[in-house]
Image 1 (cartoon, helix red, strand yellow):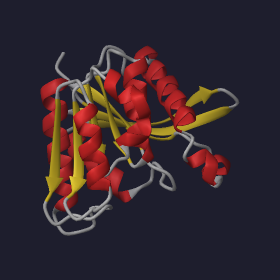
Image 2 (cartoon, one colour; image 1 turned 30 degrees about the vertical axis):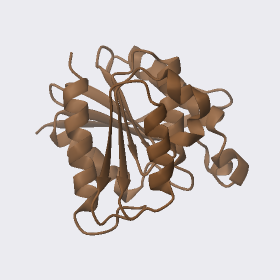
Image 3 (cartoon, one colour; image 1 turned 90 degrees about the horizontal axis):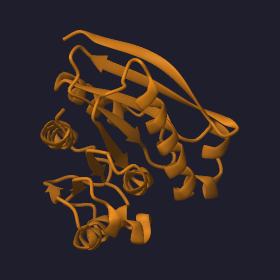
Length: 212
């Protein structure tokens, strides 16, 4: 499959969001990645998932919502409002970009990035789908009840503590939703085959809901 790859820079307040945009030929949609604290767009896990999505005809944007200086600040890492605003800014940019305009958009969030994805989906009501990997949807607060985009929560069935947070968040979601516990997986899905399951579940969810 032919894939066009671009390094992009998105102005955001007094900073710049740097991202890697991958666009397969005849893409059926675009997935923006909002990773968690202490991670980056170079994360092997998110890049693995992105490649699976690309192979399923989905464009992806892996990006750093925080600058390196901001990411070194513990408080900024957990500033969900800031992460949300940066994700909204990136969403506006891809909607207006000649390379991606017109494509249905989904969010893939991990850790704190999942909360930002849910809150951004409330602000951007036309987001077609959200997937959370080992996320903290609880940090979206009361906004979680206002999400209308279809939401898939993926959690390792050995990720104790995070499972309960996701189960509680699941009951509050009022949209089309699903919660899948990935067998044998801990928080980072490092066990053999578990991250592949995450990627395949995500690809299935986006294929269904990112239809033009």
